[in-house]
Length: 466
Image (cartoon, rainbow, N blue to C red; front, side, top):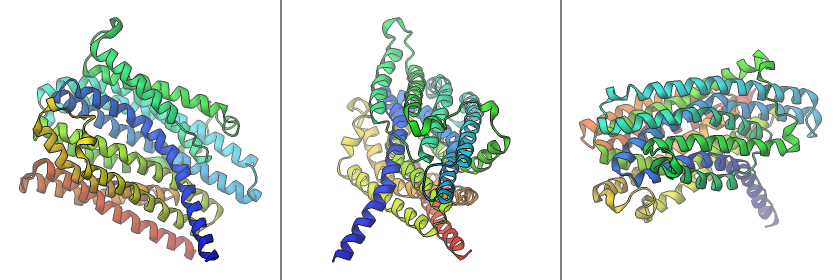
C-alpha cells in the first residue's frame, strides 16, 4: 500500500511539472486570443455582416500570427537544450559560461528573425486583403474585412517580439504569468473598441476597422508589460540582450533551420483553415457568421493545447539534453492525457449548454437561423478540439526531439491528401455545405494526429536503441 501511495504521488508530481510549465504559456496564448474574442463579441453588437467580415479578418490574422510564431517557437527548445547540457556538465548546478553565451546569442538572433518575419507577414496580410474579391466573397463582406485586415497587420510585429520573450522565458523554465495583464488588456481592448467603433472623445467613428486598430494598440501594451517583468527577473535579465546586430550568423541559421519547418507546419494548418473559411463564405453570411463564432470558441480552448505542446516540448528538449530518453516519453504521454481531459470538459460544456457558450457572440437580433446553425456546428467543434489539440501536442513532442521535418510531412498528408478532399466531397457532392466543411477539418486533423503520435513513438524507440 505504501508503495502504491508513493507511486501515485510521484505520478501526480510528474503531471504537475507538465501543467506548471504549460499553463502560464496557455495564459499568454489566451492573452492574445482574448483580444480577438472581445473583438468578435463587440462586432456582434454591429450586426451579422460585421461578424462575418470581421470574423474573417480575425481568423486570417490568427492564421498569420500562428505561422509567424512558428519561426521563433524552436528558440525555447534550443534554450532548454542548452540548459539541459549545462546541468549535465555541472551536475545540476547553475548555468556555466558556455551555456550563458549560447543563450544570449540565441535571444539576440531570435529578435532579428522575428523582426524580418513580422514585417514580411504584415505586408502579405495587407496584400491578401486586396485579392479576396477573387474568392467569391460578397462586396458587403469585403468592404468591411479589408480595412480591418490593414489595421490588424502592424500588430504582428509586437506580437512576435512578445513571443521571442516568451520562448526565452519558457526555455529557462520561468514563463511567468500574464493573468493580471490578460484581465487588464481585455478591459483596455473593450474600451478602445468602443472608442474607435463609435468615435468617442473626438476620434473618427471607424466601425469594424476600429476593432483592428484597437487590437494592434493592445499588442504593444502587452509587449511592454511582459518585457518589464522579464527585466525584473534576476535569472533572466542578465541573459536578455537586444543587440541583434551582434548576433552570430550560425545562430540565426539554426533558428531559421528549425523554425522554417515549424512555420510551414503551422502554415499548412493556417492554409487549410483559411480555405475552410472561404468555403464557408460561399454558403452565405449566416453560415460564415455561425462558423466564425464556433471557430473562435474552439480557438480559445485550443490555446490550452498550445500551452501543453510548448511546455511539454521544452521539457522533452531538456530531458534529451540530459540524455534521459525514458523521461522524454513519459512527458509526452502525460501531456496527451491532460489534453484529452481538458477537451472532454469543454466538449461536455458545449453539449450541455450551447446557448451559454454562444451567448457572448450571438444575440436574439441575429436571428434564429444563425443561432441554430452555430449550435449544430458545436458538435463538430467537440471532435475538432480533440483532433486538432492532439496533433498540436504531438508536433511539440517531436520538436522536443529535434524532429520538425516529420511534422511537416504529416500535415501535408493529413490536411491535403485526406482533409481537403473530404471537405470538398462532403460539402459539395453530399451537399452538407458548411457541416461538410467542418467534417473534413475533423478528419484531416484526426489523421494528422495519428501520424504524428506514431512518429513520436518510433523516434523514441530509435533513440533508445542507439
